[in-house]
Length: 193
Image (cartoon, rainbow, N blue to C red; front, side, top):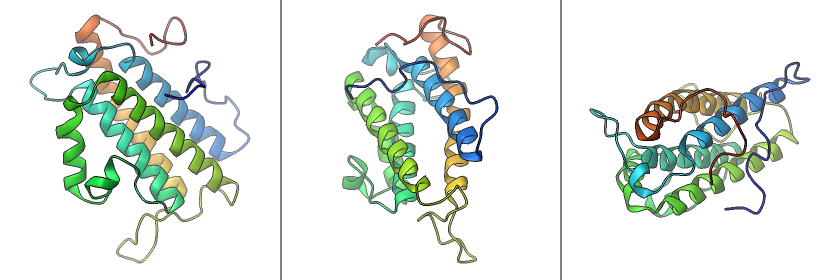
């Protein structure tokens, strides 16, 4: 975990963003914070609780979204995958994504939270650094597609926003089944540690 909280205040996307990047990144930050609120303050047993008939758990979502964040950083900055994924192939093979799913229940709650937080911090830093060199239309290292093009930074960030949108909904249902925590916005911030 870092010394600075990931979300010192509840993030609201700018109502009248000055730039496209501010608007899109503001929406991503809100989805990240909502996910954090849905998974925070739980122990290993709670994180490993499925919502039948699915085998999806909050532990698996935490580790999966940590890998998604790391893939964003890697593709945006043309960087290698960080650990633990670098030791298991990288982000381009299905085996690595399967490994993430299969091993999430082997990790402690503290390790899962720290892994996700490190991945978010890395992705934020890499995207911010890339935006000092251009806007969201600049090409990333994700590709080449069949036509020889590379995904833009915009496409990467929008894909991550979509990924969070899907999984925040999953996390909401699972968390409600665990302890009844529901809602779109927390009543107080920050959430339980």
